[in-house]
Image (tube, rainbow, N blue to C red; front, top):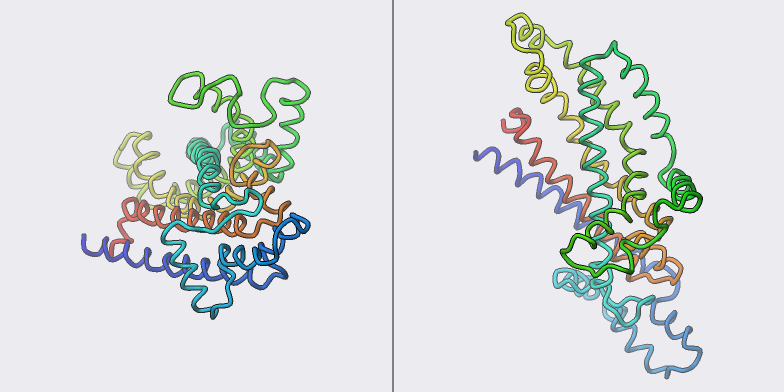
Length: 328
């Protein structure tokens, strides 16, 4: 038990250092760019603001004349307090409130799509590897590899054009319909699922082949191990060998890749949200880039980075229970 706690603590320390490095880069990069958010807002008002107001704006964005170390300390203090600054595109709304609204939809879309793709792909990989001379092994791997070769945004545009514009089967924007009232009620939940179906389908289809092929290849390698041969010789039921002995060990590389793949899934979700006008982080990022909203871009990059690091830490904890060797 003590070794497990030590392992979890070590991994947490590693990701804490990685998060600190990411936050530091997030602080430095915007300050290397020409201009500042206050000047952008001041220019948009075209002389309607007094020149004295620009200093107050710079202070609200954390761009003071204080030493860089003092600014950095204030930046870290603000993050710990949930203060990510003020948005330019939505001025004077706080960045934390804007991101909070979009983050829920991104987690729902990317998280559910990734879990579905992982479960279906891993299950198919186990079945195909166990019956590797069957028709499924001949048809599914090349078909899913073909779909996996397409970028997220390309498949999203094709799906949106066919099922959204041409056939008009699904909506082409928003997270739910105007006719429903947000809340824990059946019409609202059904509307949310209806609007998320096409974006989620795009993300699942592109990533499904990777999970299936990875699990299939690892499963085939595992089935050639001596302990599988010994289990067959002892007369252990085939289903038990497939699930408890082979699949349990073969799934470890997939679990390790789950946390790493979250970053790719989030990047794909951002582009998919832009195409479907889905009100998540991707849609917010598009507006932030168009408005040169550096504080909002900083906040979005920071939340994505912390989400990926947090997911990897949780995967490390899951591997601890699946693979006893990590407890040594």
